Length: 437
Image (tube, rainbow, N blue to C red; front, side, top):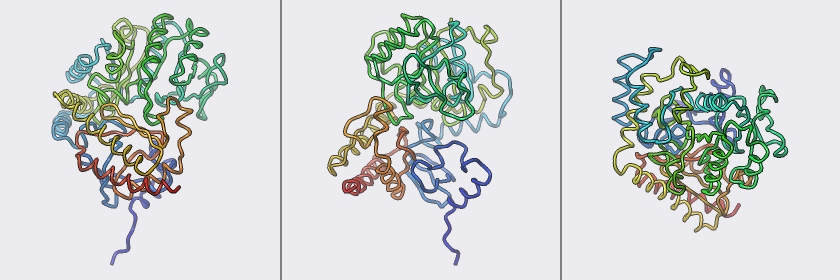
């Protein structure tokens, strides 16, 4: 008889000898929660199976792109057909034009765009373009918002508004982040003061309208309105990082949600990724024609990429956008997500466990706190040990949520009512355990 072996643990040990930390992106290592990462063998619909053959309900969906679930037939067919025609050409294709047309049709603030291969690439290129278009060097970002791992963006708050950020990673020289001003998310007075001090030197303000890397924290409507007003007043560009929220929270992305509350609202530039690639490495940055025409080969701001507009990735993204554009798609997806968050809230309330949750479209988050936090400092008050108990308990019950309490979650159109009911039931049993901790 063959002895029982944990293939996940075996693979992790092999990986650690070859890959730093055994993973190719840090959060996958389970360092925040402890234990052994699950090595995915295959996925279908709302599920994936690990190296041991264990099935999980998947609430990360490749961190957002799998809005249709895994292996959607229309997307799979488009990718297979594109792959037969060729993997990469390093030359223009019609499908790049079609994808650009689809994005621009759905996001009115974008008049022109450039396709790239990753969210990091899109964000760093957007900042370069903002600097080139305005002739200024300084920019604002917010603590808790993640815009990729470009040097100037790996920065924490300085000691005050008169000083700029400090590097958060080894290998990032202090001089590289000297023009990055880090503010507190949703802090109106601080925002006003920052523009009063530095407004004429600012190239742009970059913000996640709904931050997904401090779990799920949305910018308040008054705060976002003031961001728009101040950028206009001082001639800085308002850059929306919608890598995570783009086509995930609404068909018009998060900016369409704010436009309903703020008449005439739109950003100057938008950074997109994840859903527009449907699970393939694809991202984009776009905005007003006058700004985008500053890019090479038309203008003096240089940006290039061998795999930009990859023909297989664009096929995947275009097929995904076609499916989510169908009538009723987002109403149904939003309903499923709200059902999950409401069910978790009710289960926590019944057990007397502090809990707060929020969602928009197919994106959600929750905190083991009595009220939703509004900034990174408040998020940090979440009890990590209690979250870890919940995470591993759900994992044992076949439910896979983000292996870190600072990450948002994602529901797909493939998730069934039974999947959501099982998740709530599993969480309810764990809330009873947390009640005594």
